[in-house]
Image (cartoon, rainbow, N blue to C red; front, side, top):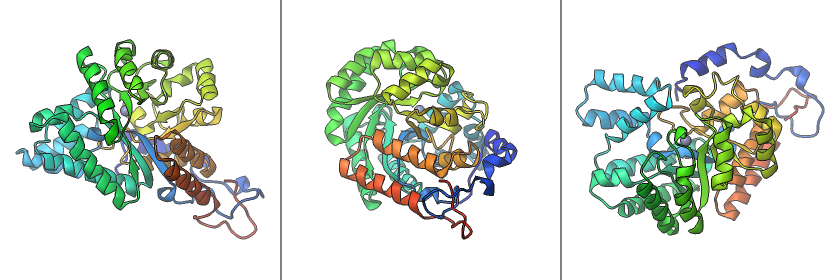
Length: 384
Ligand SMILES: [Zn+2]
């Protein structure tokens, strides 16, 4: 499978200090554990939950191309579309391209395909539980269906495909916070009604300059209805957006949380409360939240003890899969297999998933650390 690496990431890979790219023999110790060389375990087999991923921003690129062609675009126009998708560099251009892609959805079968392929791609990345974010309302309007009818159709495709791969899924209803107040309240009520079909949380994304205040009423409805709260915060806005999310919404998890690194007290609070931060490194680099993967605060947050998870955010535009995020965390940020296993464990502990599945997956993480990789030369044991 060829992996498209966006320019800033390719630059990082080329310029990463060699100590971050390879594990030097000097780092090998005689700690207890397996004989596996750190950095050689297969990350695709590391059981992980994917908690911050937008369904309509994660349509397979080949499917976007098919749908664009069907709309009448010729090859040159499709090529230009892909170039636009791959050069998203701000929240504004991202939202424009995201809407452009969604406009190609014209039939319920398109939605079936998007949901099926989404789960297939998650399974290929070693995801055992996924929590896609979306709202079905805009697509339902285009298709002349009620949001509930479309949602139930999506749920049946998700469920059937997930069963094939032994995966589970929960849904995060996540409106754009820029929408008007009555839509946001209706979104929260809809999320609560759809709880019986697998909605586990209410989140919200979009331009963070809108703040959290306008979401409080909708959040209260969602929480009273038994849902968890997963706002976007600490992405394009500073640490105040993170502290506001904690204060105003009592967030259970944060989508991003990246800019909290600028405030040491806030980082201590995130550690103390163990609020999971669902980090998406490649997305952050594209949207200017971090200049490069190396300078991204991922490593500092992990080392501070924040309950970090890794996520693709929008696979059409940023990392091609959550697996790519783990690979970059290893190859560029220099995280050890033990740190990567901790991140996977964080994702499973922060997931709204069935308890037996969680326990199974956590056992799988322990097995992953015990073996599966390239053995170190005899007599040399690897610090993992
Ligand atoms: Zn997001």
